[in-house]
Image 1 (cartoon, one colour):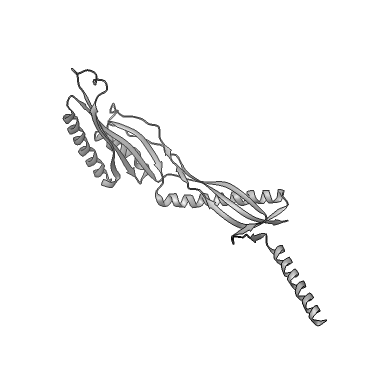
Image 2 (spheres, one colour):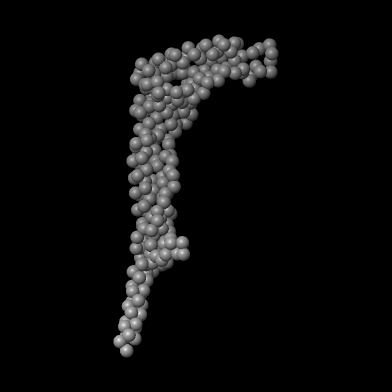
Length: 247
């Protein structure tokens, strides 16, 4: 009799424990040992943060034309020395001035005429600036030193500032995801119990670029260039899986 009573008490205890486990959580282990949610809410949300740029890249070029390829090359080399010397004197380092393109070729206009051969050369540079307010001044220095073309200005962010802006954008994205999850839970008779899984895709800052323009005619040597900058933004997206329980 006592043995039967003890067995019944043991069975009742196991049933009570099983009931408590099912009530306390909505996650159950699978055959592979992974946890699977009984109820979940999955949300994809975006976040964006904006800042004034703290980096600028100028694209400028020295060009030359002539009847002899060697003469064109020599003219480009002389222009290179003059341009680099002027930019270095202004305050830029060697690493701030890099070659993007160097090309000397026969002109398309005379290629089919053996009696008239002309050569064209271009040496294109990318000039990096940490001071975006100095863009106009550096353009003037480059043009005065022989740059025939100022083709584009791109405003962006330093690595440190981009990381800061990305963190701000992630905070915004998570706040948006939390808000969306709450709305979905309320509409479904559920409550959000916590975050089960979260991931994010890579981000790319949206840089501001000026329209392409040229100064091939030299312009007014006494004029100064004024450049208006625009904001740069970093946009990210997050995918969040929330654990949900009945409301």
